[in-house]
Structures are given as structure tokens and as C-alpha cells.
Image (cartoon, rainbow, N blue to C red):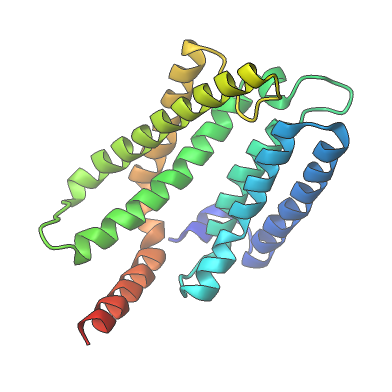
Amino acid sequence: MRLRDIAGISRRTQARLSWAMEVLLVGILLLGLYRGGPGVVVNTLIALAVTQLPPLLERDFELPMDPALTLWITTAVFLHALGTLGLPWSDLSFYQSIWWWDHLTHGLSASVVAAVGYATARSFDEHAEGVVLPPKFMFVFILLFVLAFGVLWEVLEFLLTEITAVFGIGTFLTQYGLEDTMLDLVFDSVGAVVVATWGTAHLNDVVGALDERIEEWLATRNE
């Protein structure tokens, strides 16, 4: 069973959903510019950049980006950008007005980070001398990789919050305190556990293609 089978919808529908969210991201960007919200603009620009990574990887590096995998990535960044916006008649963003929104986006984003960490680790395991990652250790590695990334993200949130407060400009990322940070790391762990438990089997196509690209690169170096 592959990732697209779990989604339960056709490949064409998955591709259309990804495209629709990209169009909506452009709308969110324009609305952010109209409202003068720097947080909305910056986060949406980053989200739009991330949505261009799957076609870039597929075109330039020949990595097979299944439509369900693309939809997975697009959904994570779309919900994050949408969360910074909120309803037109409210001054509060979805992150501020919906208590579970932050947990949802952290879990989804962590699952994407976990997938990247898994694919990278598998490639190093195959090609780097002296690196051996037993299957049973991979679960622990993915969890630690995501937690390390999560801690780095929380530090970045804290620094940006402090810097923007000093200069009196709107913040791009907001940290709401120690409890919020701990909850973020908890849901980061949830996303990592989901990928480590069920998701790795559905990333084999990407890992296999990545291995082929590395082997070609190594062969070129040895010529």
C-alpha cells in the first residue's frame, strides 16, 4: 500500500487539491498585503516557496514526487499560512482564536520534517562509510531529528519575537510562553511518531531515487 492509497482519493484529485491550495496561497498573500500584515506576507511567501520544491525536485533531480506526497507538503504549509490570517471581521488569527490550530500545524509540519530526515538518513546509511543505522534505531533517529528541529524552531520564534519587539514592528512568528513551547514539542513528537511508525514504508520511491542520484554523483567523482 502506498501513500496515495491511504489518502483514498485519485491522483488527479490530489494534484488538483495541491494546485487549489497554491492559488489560495496567492489570495492570502494579496490579502496580507492589503491588510498590511507582515506576518501573513512573510509566512505566505515562505509557504509558496515550499510548494515549488516538489516540482523542482522532480524536474531537476528526477525524484518521484507522488501527488499524495506533494499534497501532504502543500497542506502543511497552506494551513500554517492560513493560520496567520484569520477571519476578515476579526483581529485575531486562527492561531489565536482556534486553540487546536497550532497543534495541527505543528504535527503536520513535524511529519514533513520527519520524512525529510528519514530519506536523508536512509541515503547516508546506504552510501556513507562508517554509518550504520539499524532499522530499529531509525525510529529513535526520526524522533530525535524532529525534536532537534523543533527546538531550533522555538529558539528562532523567541529571537524573532524579541527582535521585532525591540524595533517595534509586526512579528513574523509568535511565541506565547513556556507552556506553548512545550505543547509545540509534544505535537512535533506526535508527527514524528506517525511517520516513524507508518510513513517510512511510503517513502521508498523517493529514497530509491535519491540513492540513484547519489550513486551517479559518486560515479562522476570517481571518473
